Length: 351
Length: 146
Ligand code: FES
Image: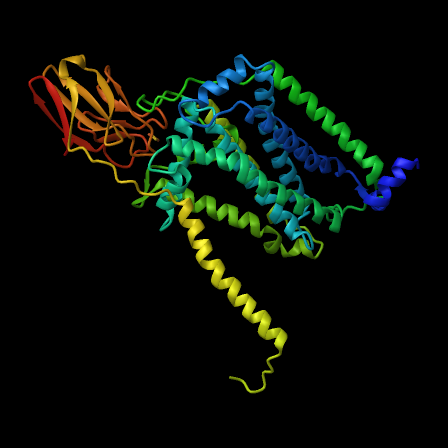
């Protein structure tokens, strides 16, 4: 070690950390590939953090200026279109990788004892990521986003007792207006980032505490992959591929800004939320307006809450996994969830 | 009180501290939650608005405007008749559009349709569009609550 490294090490004890990381190893088996998606989701999160902070330099969250400021970013700021595209595409890729990571850990039963809290923190992170998508959608203040957010914030109204209040809190008033823009902006750039940083910290710490889970019935090859530097290199390769895909999408398909909101114009055709909300969108469309005198939104609300609660409880419901046996029922449930999402999203695109 | 229970200086202090934190924290939390809920600002409620000359709305066409912050749609159904409804779709709140060829209101968000009496006739909308009263006074369209 040179003198500077020694100086640094004396203060930061980095060699202890490196020793710890090089003793840590990642299991090597036929499903190891899927481990890469957690790190990739983190990568896209970091891209969001950087590009988000950059966009903040020019963005202005008022109904009069929001759309113009985004147009200014796109047309006047050097590489503005590029940074905005990176932010939009990376958001999509982040949701996609989080979903892949979630389902792969689900099928590998990585949630089983003692990693229940990793599952809970991961699932909460998925909700936070969706929250980022929802709150960010309105910020350019264009017509599609305006009506999509109007619909999205109307859905909670049917929740018994607190529904009305939830809508008011989200919108900052009775309908989508300047107050809503400010609220969603605050959520998007301050509240959700703080929450997600805390949750990511917890999730990664738990990952260090428990190590990587091995799927039931799989005997990993010995020795495992040393975390540092071998696995870190693998992660870096994945991150580089992720970056290439992101650059490809952002340059070839830059996102387009829609027309500025006119609150007195009829909703145009083709109002659709982002793809990751299409499952909910299509479900709302397929369920008839009234079921036994109850509005479809109320029915869908109850359904969504039930699904989310069940998802949180999976590690506690799947007792067999805790004992090292895999219960087919949970595999089937996971497959049904994926099939339903694919069918709903395709229907939403086709019809 | 249980005579067996021995109060030490330490557990007295920790219980006192816990109660103090609780007593301080609850009102603080209440204030913060109230802060998040938007205030109900009372604005002047208009009884009637003048929506301009009815001849400005061509026959079989519509115009959307605000009445007490709510969007309403005026449609000239006959040469000398104008009707007014809430323009907010009763499904999830998009603004409806008047379709002159079909003579109905359509919501493009999920395809609900309402006839010229405001009745929901197709799509997921659960109830009719709320009607407003229209009066024609010297060619002016006066709109008020029904
Ligand atoms: S909001 Fe009008 S049909 Fe859904």
